[in-house]
Image 1 (tube, rainbow, N blue to C red):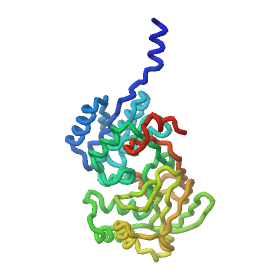
Image 2 (image 1 turned 30 degrees about the vertical axis):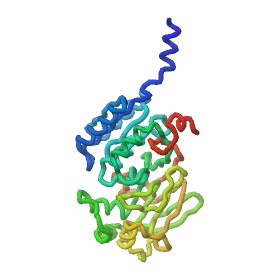
Image 3 (image 1 turned 90 degrees about the vertical axis):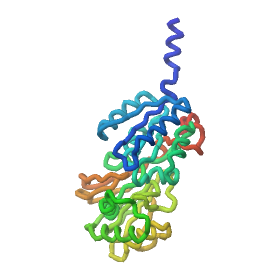
Image 4 (image 1 turned 60 degrees about the horizontal axis):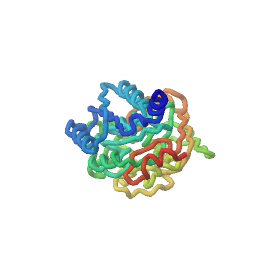
Length: 317
């Protein structure tokens, strides 16, 4: 009897169907009815779930860390890009799967990975039992899943603030003009893989995924190739950033000499101290002299209806 009990305890897959829901009640699109709808679908599918309803990011992070130690099937970020990032930082290189239930203002990460936010579709991804692997990056000890930016985007983010997302290109153009005027241009050295060059940009974006602030900054970012797109203006004053943002909004911009795009695996930016960094929807002051960004290929598992069954993808790599 003792031997049988030992065998049972050893091989029983603990929490194999359990999902943890990280709910951000401060998210732009949060409403109790939306969470109730998600829970109703989980119950209908006979899925075990636990709610993580934290009063601060630090508390939520601690609870996610504890949840991951219980080896659940997945952890679902119910919020915007900041919530998705908070969950993802505890899942890199581990077996629990990242799920996204979009409740944010821009939902850049969800939109880049799945298309326009759709609660019903999001639930189908979560309940699919299928997963694929996506990239992430590390910068200054912080995880990046979608994008980080200096200059124009942090200023544009502040100008939009609590306003609604602009619906027309002319409004985007006006906001971008205001944001560009607020950027203080300073020389920056960029080392990207084997290349190095000096610029003084007003726009500097590093995108693992397509969308930033609801804008399609890249035409076709690959989420599993171990590289990021680096976008910047050359800093000679010729680039009209208001026109650039307007065309990006319309998905019509073609990168050229004035605003360029490169792809890289390891990126070093210097000097950086004192600048504001936009990172997956949050703004952080840069405290170090340089920023080293490295992309890690396929280290986070993501629920995806179109992928192979999760058990198969879990043994890859």
